[in-house]
View 1 (spheres, rainbow, N blue to C red):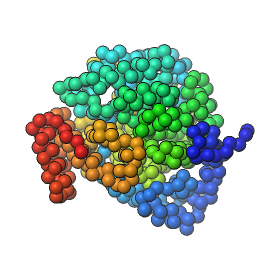
View 2 (view 1 turned 135 degrees about the vertical axis):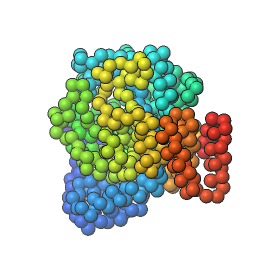
View 3 (view 1 turned 90 degrees about the horizontal axis):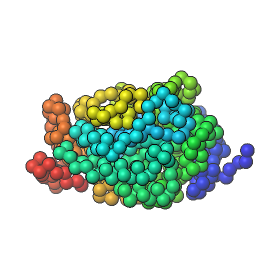
View 4 (view 1 turned 180 degrees about the vertical axis):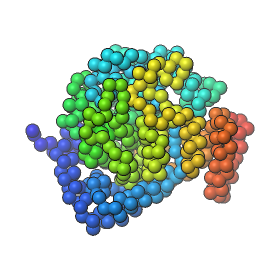
Amino acid sequence: MLMKKYDLLSNKAENFMANNEIEKNLSTALSLSKNEAYLKEVIEKARQAKGLSPIEATSLLLSNFEMINQSILEIAQTIKEDYYGNRIVLFAPLYLSNYCVNSCTYCPYHISNKTMPRKKMTQTEIKQEIYALLEMGHKRLALELGEDPVHNPISYVLESIETIYSIIHSSGEIRRVNVNIAATSAENYKLLQQAEIGTYILFQETYNQKNYELLHPRGPKSDYAYHTEAMDRAITGGLEDVGLGVLFGLHNYAYEFMGLLMHSLHLEKTYGIGPHTISVPRLCPADGIDVNSFSNALPDDIFLKIIALLRISIPYTGLIISTREKSLVREKALSLGISQISGGSKTTVGGYSVYSNPKDTAQFDISDNRTLDEIVYWLMKNGHIPSFCTSCYGKHRQGEDFMKICKSKQISQFCTPNALLTLQEYLNNYASKETKDLGIELLKKELQKISGVRKTIIENRLKHLNQTGNVVFF
């Protein structure tokens, strides 16, 4: 097999994600992971909160020194607090269609699955879903659907986004739609940018090309290069915020971690904007999918260490964890670096409304089945501020502008006040009595941490919200 030349600034996957470069970096990291003196130097660098190189971070991931591992967790907690404070952004996935022409061996949507009922929502049904989500209190969605050029063309995605944004309900409106759809053309990404989506999200699944091709034997997704180069096309197509992720469990976790960091570095150095978010899904049970048949399943301790090291390596990036994970794992992950979580989620097509379809349309099993209100209460009970803020999109703090603000640790100047405002909005309109009572106490405590003119402005905007029902974002 011809060795590919590594080129960080190339827009070709064979260059910026060259397998021989990943393998070489892994070998170096494995050797360094046994050098305690070197690891201590990396730990000291990590304390500066300016990020780590892929080799540095992976050497920490592969280390077995207890003192090093403890330091990783402590530093991650400190960086999370410095960059993001104690706020946690909430969102919900919205599954539009489970039609798919791919043959991904780990996903029940694969075309060969004849036991799964196929469903594509009409625009009327999407409206019913939005009404149900708004009545729960959600303001931010992530659209999900299978890849099928006949059933799910880009025109259907764009029409659905327009429908969602058009809905003004007594419970409010969806303020931002993020989109997780299959790799597509720069022209289609431009159309998504014109539709004013938030973040474009696409999971790589696995960075190992050989394994990728085995896991995706047929369908358009089987093209490794086209899939891996999607973020380059998205950014050149005008989308400023992109979200990466791998499905941990499909391949060796250290390889995936290295690939994820190298991909992030490629985007930052090439376009000046690293990933807006990184998601950390793990392989989990689903219709016709047995996780025991995958030998790279990830244990909780390694999973949490990966989250901590992502926070240390790329301090500015939002980290997302879904309801795939049990509540206890999600609780531990919050302090280590997670800044966004889904809540009250349904992975079925039409799962939120009275038109919901059977559970067997679900893409994967949910481990955290609590309602949004229960999630909000749980977050507050653990000292977090639940946030429904979408202000950065509305204020055009995106891409390079967002990165500059976040890297300077100034993003909390906007995010914390907006989190308090949207929490108050949730308490006024959606919360149970128990949640509202706890929320009022949390708001009082958080306001005590703020002083001067800034506190006065926040208090005035909270008063305006309570009087008019309208949020004036920072």
